[in-house]
Image 1 (cartoon, rainbow, N blue to C red):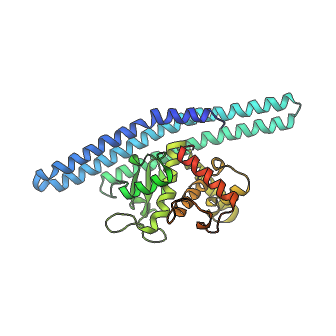
Image 2 (spheres, rainbow, N blue to C red):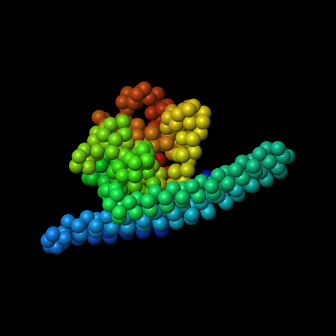
Image 3 (tube, one colour):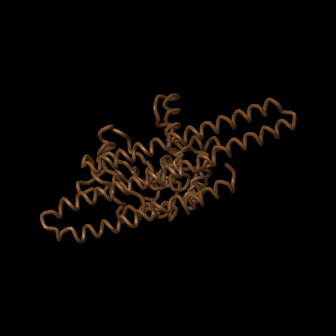
Length: 324
């Protein structure tokens, strides 16, 4: 979509639809601190009360995130789908007025296709939000999986270096294992929650629940999906799944869906990359910053060409501005 329409949608989204999750995070965080402060006075009941209270607060926050996310998905889908159709009709009429009937028909068909894809994609986003969130809330309340936790100070510091203030780390949650392990799912994001298996190509957690060094790349990549959620809505879910499906059909593996350099070679802008390519580029930026204070071409494998470096730096600025 062309500016300024997406910018207005993004501002309205952040100002109104994301406000409840920010408020709920603050309020339930305060309730959690009160619970931890006063539960010891309950004597033998302190541990079960604290355990149940923590799970109840976490499940409540999950459901608030689900509800606000669904409202955001509906809002953006109902605005963006007609906009796709309007653009298609506008271009088709322009081409028809120039006597290009065949091109006009193709452009109209393309607009209809994009409109249908956006509507179906919005339904997929809503379904996955509802399924993942409600399932985890129920499992958490039923003591079948651990509650999520907020990001630790070191994790926030790492992500702030990459995203600046375009990622609201205060509302980000991290969910360890549970149903993600049972169904053998890859690390993934729904809403503001990172769902991580206990191990993925190596252990992702220390026994105390902190992340291992091997999880650094995974954290950055998945945080990029949270950034997409916060700055461009839940459509990253169906778009990422579609990119993985197409890659699997073409190559037999979903890995190609993550490679951003082919997109750069085709002349795609950062916003034209699929969500996995965007997240992989951000992950690579994080890796490049591991040992150097700035992004340098020689820190990448293979090293970046000058044009690739310019592309990466421009994309990074877009990320820090929250242009999703």
